[in-house]
Image (cartoon, rainbow, N blue to C red):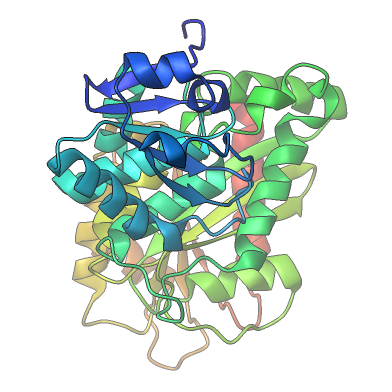
Length: 378
């Protein structure tokens, strides 16, 4: 990563991404012929900017993962688009120009070119390699795609404050606290999908210092398999009334000195193509099967096999929860093993566990298997 600059061109002579210094610099604005400024921060730019003829829009938001950036993205995209189509030149900035503003520019490429998060992020990173988006904003970008770039409050696609606060506080605790004098300025902006560079190394170092291992788990499966019920049974020890997950839930589950960060991702068919956004750095997969759903077990097999073919998951452990074993017509673990084709897996460490999410039967046995196998790899 090169030295961070105040401003860099994402689209030459059209769209710039920068920091607060750039937005307050008359020279920068003049040299680049900026006609529109989009501020994505709480800090103000000089009051004379509107008087200079520059059109200014401000999104007041903090750089924390539980801040609701998602609902502002359509307006931000429209502002940028209208400026560019009218022949203008746009500067999008935040305080450092690496998290909030970068997320907005990524959203613009997603919206205008119908790109996924990964491809849009790569476009922006090629131009400004210092971007580090905080994990909550990254997940909101995923949801921006899920809701087809048109989020509405109350339609089930918005991130809950509880979930994103939990993600944010977990991430801060994991990376920044012992290094606050230097690293916190940058590490708290690392997205979960980019931890393989700096974050994983520091996470391993912290694990050594405090004696606790960490494991990133992706829990997927068809809709109504019981994923969210399993997650909150493990986390809270309670049965939680759930609705279909559109987006994700994330919780930390502590077991035998291992901190499992479990990402529960929605299983509806229109959401499944977005599972891949969660693959990077995943050490273990929990695939949940409704043992009573004989009609869709072949569909579950197809989704599982498709996912296991992804290169990013080649080293991930696989735990299959054969859920809903309390139902009278449920398939047993041996039958599900056969129907999912698990015996045909090569170079994959896997295990199937009969389970019942509502009673908790089998859940900790599954974690026991995961913890034993992750310890062997450390």
